[in-house]
Length: 107
Image (cartoon, rainbow, N blue to C red; front, side, top):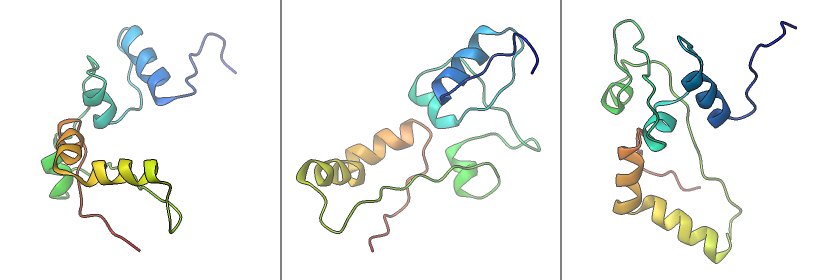
């Protein structure tokens, strides 16, 4: 109820607010910061830096899992996107933008 308090509806809006408000601290992800080349700094937790390596070895505790979920017979364009994400090129993009790439689970 405080007047003038910025409110963000999306992750990008939150990052925009953090960038433009001097001294601001707010929520974001390493993936958003790296993927959008934002001039923001992800904070360490208990002196552990937020890196893909630290996420993989379990020392950085804050993670967000992302899943691709489809019906049993996805449309061709959906399957092409999934195939790209699972390709070496897609995995390299994900790694470069702060994602930990796991072996896909197919059910």
